[in-house]
Image (cartoon, rainbow, N blue to C red):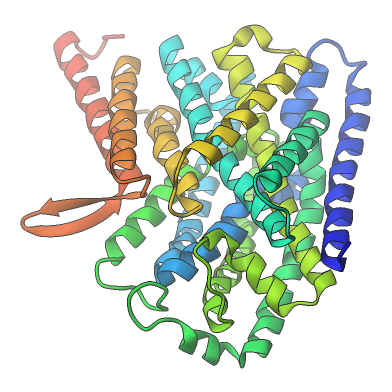
Length: 481
């Protein structure tokens, strides 16, 4: 066994064991609290996470293989365009500060565990509840698929052949989530963050030293075409619209909302919104790895392999193994929260007969992971990040019902349902027409523009929702139900 494989196995296995142990202990404590306590502990951690744990949990399920694998891969392939993830995180935290404490308060007052619960409580519509739940489920499958790709990429770098890395990644995630519940990622998110910070700071110090400094890194980036350090003509519009649509979608996903709803108080969420931008600094440093790969002479047709190949080339074997373990744990922790969030939707909103059953929730979480595995095998995305952006197109269609539903706007449930249907159908049709690319090319007044597909679909959704709500009020009067 090489040092890299040995170190990887030790850190990866210890993380799974620690997460499972703390969860089993919490489950034993919950066993005497009455029916449903065990499932509440598994699905929402008992709703008692303070500001410190919430910071690690929300950051842990927000900064994923998307951050460590997909963003550097996009920067490697497309250059500065891949940095759209930085303004996206700058936009999202004021949104979290303004909206999420209100959402938490409504959820706590109504005893709601999911976004679909909140929508049902606000509008009293079973059909709209199902629409939001189905959107959450469909959006999370490609996002979990991205995490499986992240774990697979490091296992491939360690030399595992064929489908074995993907199946090993699936088995590790399935076991970790089944045993751990939400306490496992909440606890091991601390380990994950420490490991990722060690890797990133080592990379941004050691790698440039090997390559001759940051001047050499930027000089090695292609001057034009793909991979350049400056935005190319025509990239500004997709860069800006992807940043905006990603920011609006980020905290609508089941996993990010699960982290929010598991908080102890609204103040814990506000505190996190203030301090979570520290992760943006980390994201910017990680994105630079895509440019460093050019300077290091990394050549690959599979962009998801860029970061593992860079570490394997420039670090000693034992530290490369540690880096690979950090990446794998950085995918395992959020993927577990994603599966738990989706299981909450399945058991409470889509198949409510399973609600309150720990075994039912575990089986639902396992079914979700099989769906994610099918996404990896069945969807032919050009970049790993396209899996996450595809999920964003779907989850954005819940924005009117979930977020605008918190306001005094008198949107009608039937209009919201129709808007959701139009936006979802349009967004998915455009995505598959464009080969899962996250932007769609429009021609207006003879000029061509590439615009975020999710944002186009959301605009159509909003137009229909407002038009039919206003139309119903005009026909039936202000007192119409």
